[in-house]
Amino acid sequence: MQLRADNVSVVIDGKPVLHSVSVEAKPGRLLVLAGSSGSGKTTLLNVLGLLARVESGHVTVGGQEATKWSDSKRRRFWRNHVAFVFQDYGLIEEASVGYNVTVGRRGLFGIPQSDRERLDHVLGHVLLSGRDKEQTARLSGGEKQRVGLARAMFRAADIVLADEPTASLDRRNRELVISFLKEEARRGATVVVATHDEDLMAAGDDLLRLGDQGDAASLNR
Image (tube, rainbow, N blue to C red):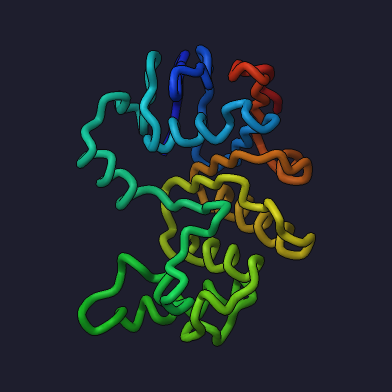
């Protein structure tokens, strides 16, 4: 599912954050939004994910004009098509690892057997086999980020949006995150990442650098 921003500008609390920026995220490719702190890369990620509204310009999703979608239509878009990987993990700390991975798929009697098998598979893929009943609050930062990856993998979403997913992680966990994002793109997902991690920038298929004034400085590859 293609995401596209055309000449978008964003103002937050009276301060211009993005100025006439255009970018396209394509299925099967990893787009990296890079720039220094305050350059607007997270804001642009949120614009593409319909988490932030624009002052001017247009956002399209799968070829549909989405700039002025209602809140209910945006919620359906997130529920049906998007997986988020957050810097602060976005997990329910008091719940189990398995609950966090399968949230949204659980019914009155838990999850179907097919989903149980999928849960075991994705936890194994992020090196958390057999830990589905463990309380999330007991995990390390790197392990929590891996739970976030497992949740995104479990959803098999059309779009994966990640905000600074490797921040504060050790090298082993950073490599796992980068590998996951590349795998999701190879699966055919549209993957967009905001980061200042040079290794993650190098792993991307497309790279957009944002200047300090929220201007697109360059689009490489």
